[in-house]
Length: 426
Image 1 (cartoon, rainbow, N blue to C red):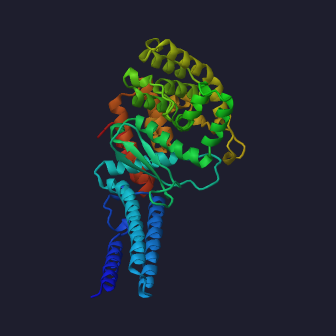
Image 2: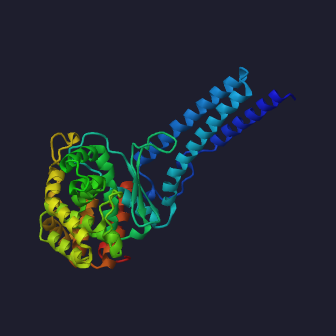
Image 3: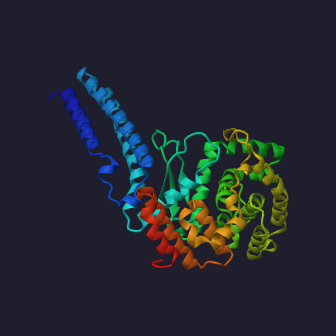
């Protein structure tokens, strides 16, 4: 055999092998084992499968075109170049498959699988934007190690190309299970909301204008942190004080970390972040609890422990916070058709309403929206009317209830939820 024929034979064998391996990429519905209540929503499943089908068909068309070119006598060097790109595209398809497989395979875990479906329901409820007319993407949650949650937003670029069709939220295992899970989860939902409503860039421009070119201005610092502040805002809007309590649970670290003022980090330093959370909460849902919580935080981490320079910078930031909160809540994104962010306040989530719901929780839990239920539990926990053990038991029952409702409707979950509320099996 001459070298040219040998090269052609190697290339043909490789592309046929590639085609055979591609045939082995089965639809997720054929090889994911999980109970029905733990499954992804139909919208999420269809969105993922359609994305994978598009990527696979694109690769198949590339293989077919390549085989046609081989039949016309493509030079070995040109054939090898085109084959290399096909192999890269094949690896991209597999990387996308693995991203979604890693998320979906956890649904087979005993207990955690159903709880993740319940978290999907909570995240989906938190993603509800009153007055927003465009389609809201589906959400899928999964567990991973680490202290903080994270999101791969829908409609963002995937590795190797293509847009992600669903929002994927990574939940830290250490946050399972207490009302703090709601704080982390809804904060990540806030990042998706910020993208849908285009909040960050316009707010950033306004803050830059406020700084007047002074890089040391508090407004300049807030501009650097605005993406995370907006996500915190959404969490507070949806969960009230439960959001701030969950935040405190994450950022209660040694003093050096709590007061580490870094303008290279998109997150405000923890001490200020909690104070901002209390200020936003007080503006959205006025109540005596917010200044009380802010003062308690300062008792835990006294400003007097800091250098004079840091104390002055923090004082300047605190002086700016009221005007900043007014700017944030008064912002009117075009996607909301003239309404300001403050207009999204839910009267059901005021501290007074949550206290009333807490006293009637046993009878009303089944009818509450997920965000309202989590906010009610967090409010009761903050006020000492609910123990940590009881809180965890209630949330477990609610997560199972929400998962069952998504799969079978409300009646299927009624007995399980009643058991959790009455304290049996928690």
